[in-house]
Image 1: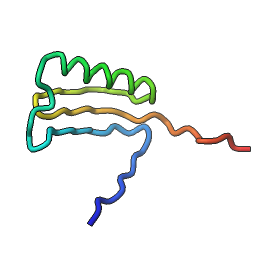
Image 2 (image 1 turned 90 degrees about the vertical axis):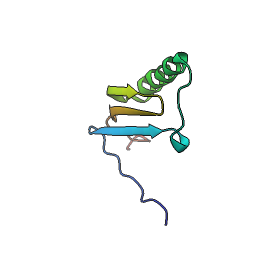
Image 3 (image 1 turned 30 degrees about the vertical axis):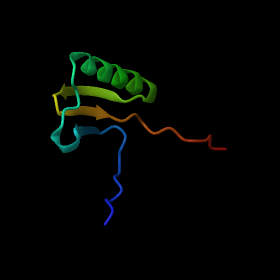
Length: 77
């Protein structure tokens, strides 16, 4: 049975967890952490996601983030 579709509400914080496959390491070298955070910084600015807190561990990560207010996809006439 497929997973239920998730509903995301703008303005509410979400706890985001990512784990390595089979509990393997996500980060091998110290530079991996910096590259990962740099990507988060770049993409959160691009999409207006507010990152409140994060914790990077060897085999998993935690982020607390809030989605921006919804913008209409096309102007309303």
